Length: 239
Image: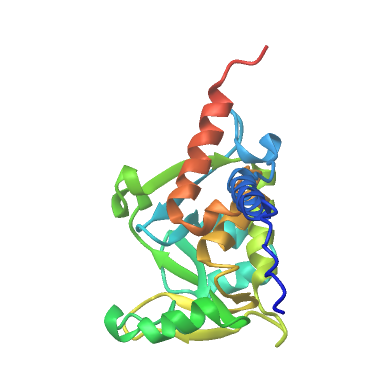
């Protein structure tokens, strides 16, 4: 005699797991690493250093006055002094191959997938001297200008410097492009979807005192929004 089939009872764990996943994603999206207002924003009339965050739609660079980078001691200043002329230095970070390559995108898609999904990819820091003021390079919708305190600038520069690969005794140029003044210095960090170019820039800005949302910093627009939020918070009246 056949035994009757046992009916499966629904536990309701599926909806609970889905709700928990949504909650985790929401928490990650809103998670903010607090900043330090004493570092981030130089007050009116106080000593400050003007910088610019430049957004080309998917990648961000920092535009920093060359003179203040060269004035501080250390290997970052040495790397900057060796660059071709330019009053501003554009600083960016990315995969050691994909970031440097400027060939047509359709031929680079397999390499882009490698950079995203293979862990532990070598990376480089770009130092690109520019003669023109960053305000002439990028329209306002793709640029944010801000004034750091001297202490905030030092913390930011130290963070960039700490990313350099100094295992050979000093900064090492890993790549350069023909007809291009940019130099790409080997970085000790690795590139992957878990640590992209905008994540790196968010870390640099956070070192300078800016509150950032790490999970959302996968996109460049989030970094512009972080500066906008800090500006609104600074302008808000205090009780």
